[in-house]
Length: 233
Ligand SMILES: O=C(O)c1ccccc1N[C@@H]1O[C@H](COP(=O)(O)O)[C@@H](O)[C@H]1O
Image (tube, rainbow, N blue to C red; front, side, top):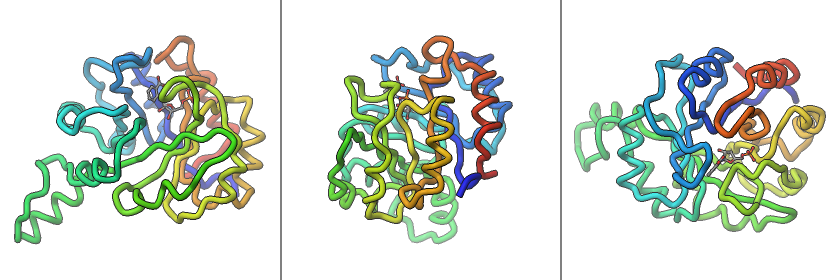
């Protein structure tokens, strides 16, 4: 079924470009906090619509660093793109904008903190096959899975994996489809959206295929992509 997915645009770097991309109203905007990436984000995120969720992308970082970026940039989600363990995700799930949830008996306080809690997106990289049993320990400790293409870099490799692998997806957890998605994938995406493999596909994640240079997104290409595929509002 087309038109039932959200859109995440990742790898934002430059202030004016962030504002322009935000005006296209994606559901998620991603900022990469990984020094080795050409899309590494530093500075301040300009004011953008509250309807757009801000995602921080991290690769094997410490809880303290993630917490610092989460608070500094008022992030909504953390995308874990390294070898983070289920226990690590569990620790992060407690992260919220007031502070880590305490063992408080105050139900009202717990509720407020719950509403402010971070969404944890755990990334798994796929090439031609994937052992889905690795997802099992993460089921309870993250909100979404994200499937990216396995490559030389931790992310942003710019090519797709064999999506039919997802026909064997054993979970009901919503997932983001990522890895090398560009305008040239529109027809394949439409087919994918009609297939069983996409049953739990919650969002499409795009990055390097929409760039003039790393981190600088091409507005014209993004508009064309959005027009060609209808996304859930
Ligand atoms: O893009 C990067 O430089 C990057 C670096 C470190 C971790 C993740 C990174 N990007 C993520 O990779 C996927 C797929 O990107 P692409 O479409 O293949 O370019 C995307 O989720 C980005 O968040």
